Length: 612
Figure 1 (cartoon, rainbow, N blue to C red):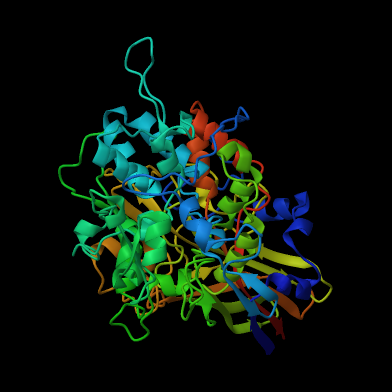
Figure 2 (figure 1 turned 30 degrees about the horizontal axis):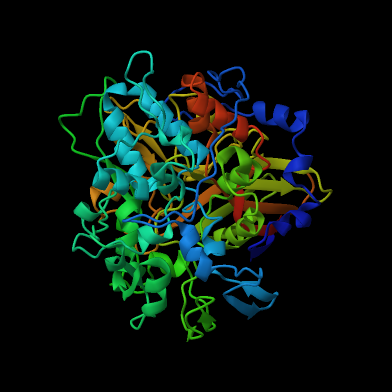
């Protein structure tokens, strides 16, 4: 018995398997072979395996949004647009970078506005998936219109939300009512750049929003989360702070140019400030939109609390803040602005807002005009930057790889390298294992976790139809058992749902925990749920999955294992398309989704060889 094992972090491992990429294994023979295998494991529904989503709407209408471009240089009493800040902290009129460093690729622009503008933070209000989800919740729960509009804009359109509260304005995402009936209310999406509310909304999570967030004593507590941040009110705009990381800020020039007073604020570099939106508790309701008497909240996403229970917490063995990963510090001194000072600053936190959702970034790139996004934003560079970032989020290692003449046995160990669960946040996200085995002749003899061109994964239960989901697996013996790390939500009756307001429990939460996270000793809001709770090797940031692969063919066998990330899981989006096809916002999102060039990303890859 002989085996060799190797761990790598590049999708180029596919070359080692005789060029077996996804594109060359989509043929009918592979599908027929997979369908001939046993029915997929029951994940709550109990139906036999069927490769089609059973309730999908036949076709979309092909509509697209028509969102206006906003005025980014607006100036108000409470906030100013990103264009005001970018005039000094981004590209100068010459087109030369204001802030640049030298690296292996030469001169790299690290200007604040340029780095930020392609992030999902900058485009949080233009996110078409968010539009569709909000529209669906409003349709389902018209009695909760005010609560939905307020809660959803608190973090996706924070400046508009705060402006509306301070000025007594009505803020709605979409139009409602009619002029004929006398109850028409305009939503921000039908406004244009002549409206202050529109400009504040469309600037997303912007400069003067984050840099004015006050350290009011609530950051890091329940009161400061779920959109509980505070931006104070000032009688004069010149009194407004612009909190930053440096204890000796340049005050005079910024005040002259922008009416903001540069101020030191330690909290601006703390995880607590991120937790104000990335810990989110909702108020669950029944299917009539009535609050659940027996339940005060549902922990929709709890990245800050997950971080608190990891080794990366401030008191942990390897302390690291959210910003240290998502806004990494530059190892060269940088000039922060094009005027006012030539001073160089060390340890500057780059404003890339690194994240994993390259799928949404590609959607925003391809439909920039329809979404009202400037066409000169370099999404491609940002996507590549985020792909590099994704590859740091986990490790995969092949262990005990062997072939006994009839079957291949192997253990796949995954280690989460992030400071929170993987995947994090909203429950449309999932991470899964894709396994390919070829024999000595290069013939594909086994595949597990193949993604179709529409974003569905062969063998995954929720990609077949509603009311079912793929269970957590410790041992996999069939190609129709796929290891998917995800959160599946259910209503108060235990019925599977992707609705934020109906969700009151996790039917499954086997998202990979961060290092240091003891599943037996964490708050209920971040508990592991489902079969993973009983899986002895699923804990403390790692999981081991055993594969037993019966195979024919000629040894030696080459094995490729990929850990992949998909931000828009097929089952969740199909539930939207099926149940809310009549909503324009859902159909618009579907138009963009159907034209996606990719649905997922490789996190990391391992290869090995098994021989008798």
